[in-house]
Image 1 (cartoon, one colour):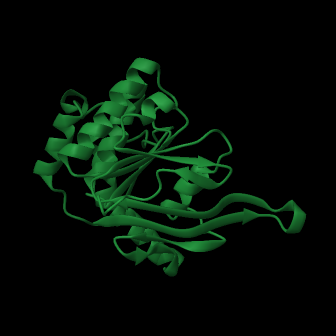
Image 2 (tube, one colour):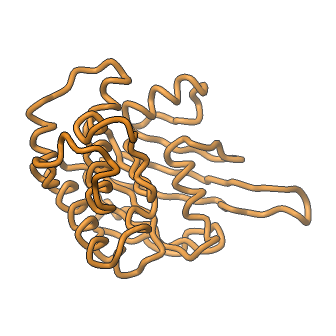
Length: 229
């Protein structure tokens, strides 16, 4: 089942001869449980695309469907609630709350939404990501790799429909990067979690189930899941 559909997505800046086409008629389809990487060089449009997929910015034209719901048909307030309940984010800069310990950071999205914490599920995430001994630590007492593990756990905690990872290894060394990507792959399989990751790193992209390539705002390969197969 397709959990994400992108149809004729455009993001233009400027007018007439000064128009910059950051995204130009992008079509993408992602199946439930897939781990997809979107690969492109700097300026190719991959970050703009991820912001559109997460509803962090609105397009010039086009639609993004998550769980068959057009996120851009929603008001800003509706989209905020939908995003909190259905989309998990993993950013390059971790974005942990410095005054909260590891466990508090992990469950924060659930508490902000007034939801019930599934303790067994959270414990399973913590175990898979190897954070059992770090739950009372503050973020500034963790390594970069450990902070990114916490960010992954936080993204998984609310059982989102999809996780969007924005250059999740950008601040990590090579060894730690491969460990973090390996953990993303494991969480995708263990929790049947759909993950869309953007990266400029060809080696890291290879661990995904499918690679989508973007150049100059256009998809040049791997965009559509071939259901007929």
